[in-house]
Amino acid sequence: MERLQKFISNCGVTSRRKAEDLILSGKVIVNGKVVRELGTKVSGNDVVIVNGQVLKSELKEYYLLYKPRGVISSVTDDKGRETVIDLIKTETRIYPVGRLDYDTTGLILLTNDGELSNVLTHPSRDVEKEYVAKVRGFFSKDDALKLSNGVILNGVKTKKAYFKMKKYDKKSNVSYVRAIITEGRNHQVKDMFNLLGYDVLKLKRERYAFLDLSGLKSGEYRKLSTKEVKQLYSLK
Image 1 (cartoon, rainbow, N blue to C red):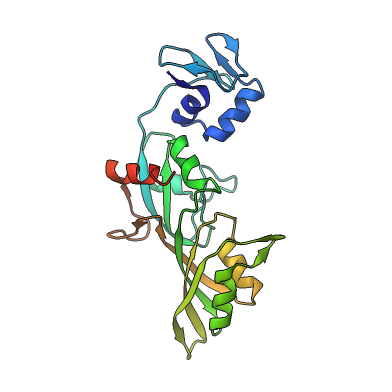
Image 2: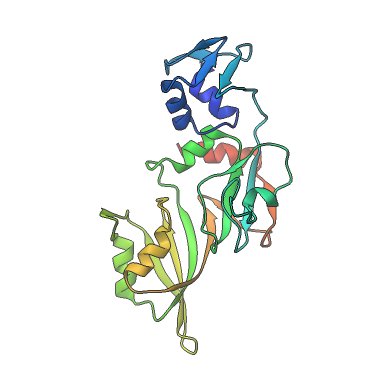
């Protein structure tokens, strides 16, 4: 037996948090009855229907993708652009964990495990995400310190981070900066640079928690090992 919201999440429908919203809003039926109690437990023998769809437990799949530039980090795109889902050969309904901007490259995870997705994206988890940014101009130590200590974005201060220049190309007047953040706000790294007047020319995510892009080229992917999945769960 497991909690209803966990069962829904494990079926790949949505995250556990959003599954709770579906239950509370009366959109979940168990064995012919609408269920609104979050403490409800179900087994594999129960018939669970969400928004008219009968749920079936799916085998969990986990992928690490090297996202190319110009690919959308979503399941579908109303403009017909290529998505991260298009790059992975599977019949399973997977979805990205978090997102990378259209013009940002690098590591992104995809899965049908709603519980793990919730673990990794919950604001309290502080999962490290490491980037290399190419920015216009000389990135000063003072600005690195400011961004590392936190700046105000949309009225909220960013958490402690790590910003340090790797290299400055005087001829082209661009800096290559390593940045490590633990939050998942939309466009956060770009917005932090922009706040101090730096134009971000390129941005690549090189690491997510302990995972990196070793052995992969842009557009390639691999399945996560059982050990890696367990390590991700241990980030709870």
